[in-house]
Length: 143
Image (cartoon, rainbow, N blue to C red; front, side):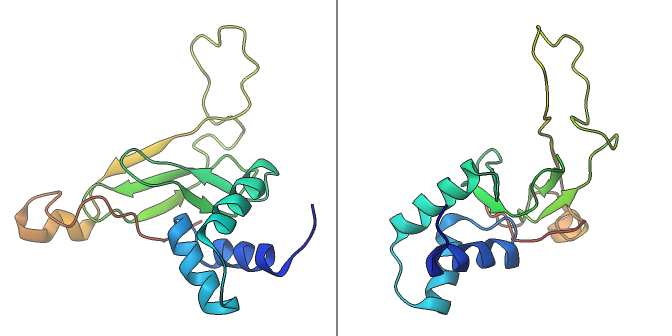
């Protein structure tokens, strides 16, 4: 894969802003290198995902998000209220983190888990969970 200024800027953006959407990456890259088309960002994110240089995740009800934490089969924790997202290390410490009761003959090498709940702020907001703005997923990472 050829190294270009655009690809490097996109990799830097994904690294600096874990769990960003393609549109957020586009805005960030434009602020650094100037002009870049949205399609170029989408195409590059696709190629980088295919090459396992970044990871594409798509939680229910959310746009696809990208991160550079690859190869460790970690999971995610998302607030149903505000959408804040955290990385959660593998539950058992070994890939694929979970063992299927029936693998149907598959050689399972990855498990994808998303934990959903309400963060302390949303639990306290207006006295009821889920009262904060819904549908957003903040770009937060915690290892």
